[in-house]
Length: 113
Image 1 (cartoon, rainbow, N blue to C red):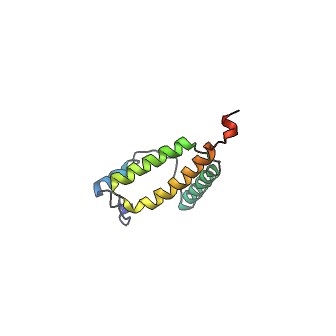
Image 2 (image 1 turned 180 degrees about the vertical axis):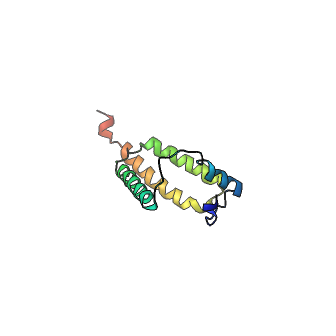
Image 3 (image 1 turned 60 degrees about the vertical axis):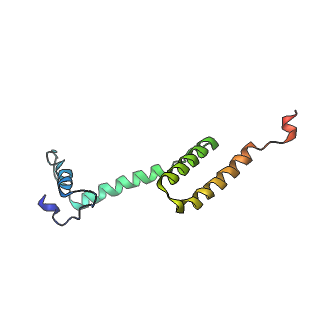
């Protein structure tokens, strides 16, 4: 724990919680010690792998999923009294309602075939 005397503790943690978190791996056996250079190399190679995964195209949400998301967002905003978020919610609603109208719009010809 002496190695961490100059580390700032997150305000969400008490000193005891921080010490417990640091000590949780104290009994872990290792096959040697890694230098800072080795640690940085490992972190950088790992973060590159994560970035490659981010390039995978996301599956588009259905209109039903988007509408459910809007309902959840509206409920959350109302529960938390976050009036300042309402303009953003309305912008989402306008975009999604427009998209829903375009995908569901039909002509009379298609109804009376």
